[in-house]
Structures are given as C-alpha cells and as structure tokens.
Image (cartoon, rainbow, N blue to C red; front, side):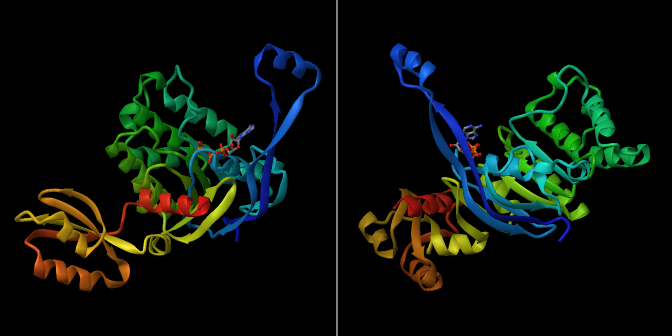
Length: 327
Ligand SMILES: Nc1ncnc2c1ncn2[C@@H]1O[C@H](COP(=O)(O)OP(=O)(O)OP(=O)(O)O)[C@@H](O)[C@H]1O
C-alpha cells in the first residue's frame, strides 16, 4: 500500500483569539485574552488506494484545505493517525516530500518576475532531480500541457490559465506519486478547465498517481472522480461512489422536453414535479424507480418534439447532502 493514504480519527483544532468589539473590548483583551477553539477537522477516517482519484467536496470552511495541509505535512494534526505513501507527513522526511505534491489554485509557487523555466530549475535543485530525468520529465510535461510557447515569458505576463499550467508542471517535476489538488481549475475559463482536467487524468494514468482533488466545479468531479468524500463542519457526510451518491440523494431524474404545442401547466404537473417551464422547453422530475414507465406515458400523451432524461446537476445533489445534514 505504498502510494495509498490512510486517515484514522484525524482532527485539527485551531485556537483563535477572540476580541470584544469596540475600544473597551480592545483594552480589556490586552489583559485578559479570550480564546475559542475552532474544530476545523473532526475525527475523520478514510482510505485511498494507490492510483485512485477521489473528489473531496464541501462548502466553504468545511475543512478541506486543513485536511490537505495535514496530509501534505504542512500542519500538525491535533489528534489521529495519518499515513501517506507509508510516511507520517508531519515528520517532513525528504523522501516523503519527493513522493507528494500540494497544488493550491489560489497560491503560486512560481517566481513572478522570471520565466517559469527558472522555477523549474530551482525545483530540480530542491528535489535533487538528476539531469536526465529532469529533461525527460520537462519534455513530457511540455507536451502534455502545451507549454513550449510559455516557458520563456516572465510569469507575470502569463494569463491565469497559462500560469496554472506552469504551476502544475512545477509541482510535478519530481514525479510525485501522490498529489493533492486544491481548486486547480479555479478562475479558469471552460476550455482551460478542460485542458487541466485532461492533464490530471493523463498524469494519473501514466504514473498510477493517487489524487485527492477539491473543486467547486462539478464538471471536474464528474469527469475525474468515481469516488467522492463529502465533508461539512469538519465531519464526513458521505464517502463512496459518485453514482451511488446521486442515486441515494436524488431519487429522481430530470426529463427535459421540447413541446411542439403548448400544454397547460396543470396538465404537465400530472407527470411529475415541474422544475421549469418556458414554452417550448419543460423540465419535470421523474421518480428514478419508474423512469421508463413515466417516459413512455409522456411520449404517448404529450406533443413532444424532443425528449431527454438526465441525472440532476451535481450541484443540486451536493446541495441535498448539506440540506439533509442541517435538517
Ligand atoms: N489557521 C487557522 N486559524 C484559525 N482557524 C482556521 C485556520 N485555518 C482554517 N481555519 C478554520 O477552519 C475551518 C476550515 O477551514 P478550511 O480552510 O479547511 O475550509 P475549506 O473547506 O478548505 O474551505 P474553502 O472551500 O473556503 O477553501 C474554517 O472555519 C476556517 O475558518
């Protein structure tokens, strides 16, 4: 289980200084400091097999980044057991650092005023990558990410998407087998998101790399992750197949029809809960257990020009997970 990840009852508490509002509060807090404990991660356990790509989802402040930082050795856990690629991350052994990488979409490791290639050379020295391997890996990454035209420009002149591609290359030069990706596509346009996604998949396949990925873009998750872990308020709400999540949480599918003649809303409602009507387009919820029967009825009885049945959008399904938790 060399490239796997084992997490048992992992927790992280932060002690935060609380100050009362106003001048009086500031004065009092000089003498009597008040602290509050924030539980960012609360006794989570999971295992990830080598080569798996797992989506790590949750709303803002759920505990995703804190978990990733513990997994990559940047934060010391408050309690629990953690084994990543056979190492205890916080011991920060050189051999451990060579096996992992943490890419944060909102933080750059590239040196701003000089071309990305210079950062690559710095990383070659840091990770002690032999020349031949460095050349080979840089060549592969240039091909996979189409970096050639970007490498000689100062990083500050690159677009956000171009910078992200260089960021990924810089983070993967040492060919880590375990990669933590925190919002790798944030702020990128749809085409660039797709490029980054394809690259992550290709890297995973080529090196059998284990990937834990957070993203607010559900397209990333559906394209890359068979399995998802959902976290909220530091606790795991779901860990399993994405398909099972959709089935469990959304016991319905969405039928989208294009009508060839108007139909009264009251009549449409008899086929299922209406999500949207804007003639000629209509969306109706169909019970998952009877999709074929309900579809046949619609096609036989309504003036339908076009008809599709889909799973509800992932955003809605994840929303249901959080709603269920707070209910
Ligand atoms: N250094 C810190 N000191 C105090 N509290 C912190 C610290 N880092 C994180 N927290 C708190 O821990 C909780 C979890 O934060 P974390 O950044 O892990 O969430 P996240 O799921 O990554 O959210 P986002 O999607 O917004 O990045 C939040 O309540 C946050 O305010």
